[in-house]
Length: 470
Image (cartoon, rainbow, N blue to C red):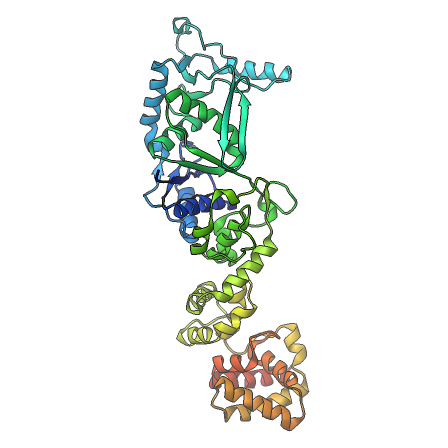
């Protein structure tokens, strides 16, 4: 058997973090078993489904590197097939026409609620002669569900779960307007797509009992089911906007790397010994459903941010420089040209050591693109005292005689420190403030070298002039 999995989002909103993890698990399971990963857009809700939401889903999956092996299937294009199968069930006696009016259904629900019962359909047209149908009522088609015994699902994560058939009513599979219901369409699509494993959130478990009854009525082979626990916020409540970013593209905007987010989501509900940092290749090699736990996971943004820092430090410098330039683009206080690009590329190995996100990285690199005179933050202003400015004026000609390699700059600063009896830090800090407008940066010798001699000396001169007037 060739494994075939699918991710089947509804395009009625954003691709949220729970959906991204479901897609990841389906992708990894298929890859681990040498199978196929598919994408189905479940857009049967025509009022709420939008092209924009479809684009967001596709963009999010592409950013995460979870590309399907075949073009996406749009469920809305398969309505004739869904109706055909409903008619097949009807002809075989496994479904029936229901002429209950909207008013009757409302009264049914209200009565059940008043009596403390679940609001289920009472089966009034299950065995009734269609000839008794009131005129002008278009019927829905309902599944003739079994009323005795139980429906059992042997779930690959949850174990064996069962429900008494008396707890399930005769669900609608085709509405009175001829459109299929979600539960019916999913069964037909999964069957026709040859899906062997349905891996989805455990909030779908109740749906699975109903879908199993459709499979059984049609005599179709059921896929294996694996219902993975949901992701909660740190407080244990259902994940929502108040817990932070929930959209995948929001994580991109905030500066998380896709490989870091995938690594984090992989470990959120799945484990393999003490393995924490896993590449895509390692994840494919190790992932299987026996490592998925049954308890809900809790989103930990601090842990994700730490993990992102680990991946960022291992990332290609040219890639990081390109992203940094993209994030800085459009800022009116910056000059982004070939010179700036060269500075950022040169200093990237040092810049990324301190950063936790790509947004942090861009912020820390912005000083390399600033025009003179630099803005100084409060801490930098405090450092640039009269004594510090005198130090900078004295140091400038010594730097002018340096070839501006990192090694030569380091030697010049150490020699100056030794000659003047100062500690190296007492020289580096006012120099850093003059060069960056702040009190944090990569090592001062690397910073000077990346800026280059002309720019560095210009910044020192501008700082001494500007601060002397304050």
